[in-house]
Length: 146
Ligand SMILES: [Zn+2]
Image (cartoon, rainbow, N blue to C red; front, side, top):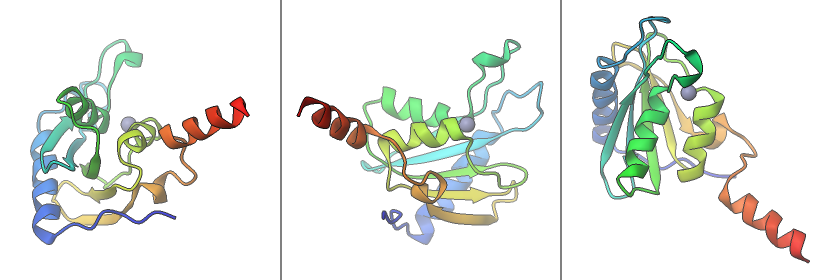
């Protein structure tokens, strides 16, 4: 079992506010469902993201992955928390859960509505039980060699 990274009230509030601001940048001409995300890394930096829809829908990227890829592209590899803001406090999609798990299996996830009210807070492991990540891959590779 994993436990979520503990957050202070100040960190929680700052992440939700940053996610609200990121949501305002969403490019969503097709779904009209803007998503904002704010990701806290172990170094204390916050990376934000919004969803970006493309007319060729397969090229669309969620807000959570936008934030995650921005963080990784800046050298961050240890995620501690993410706040996601949508109109209905929705949880990240399956693809985003997998991407977040790669860099923060024990991270905290905060789900908030567009008014900033936190509807749910828990660990990523709650959203992706028995997740597959780098540790499992390495274990499997070692097992295959014996
Ligand atoms: Zn997603």
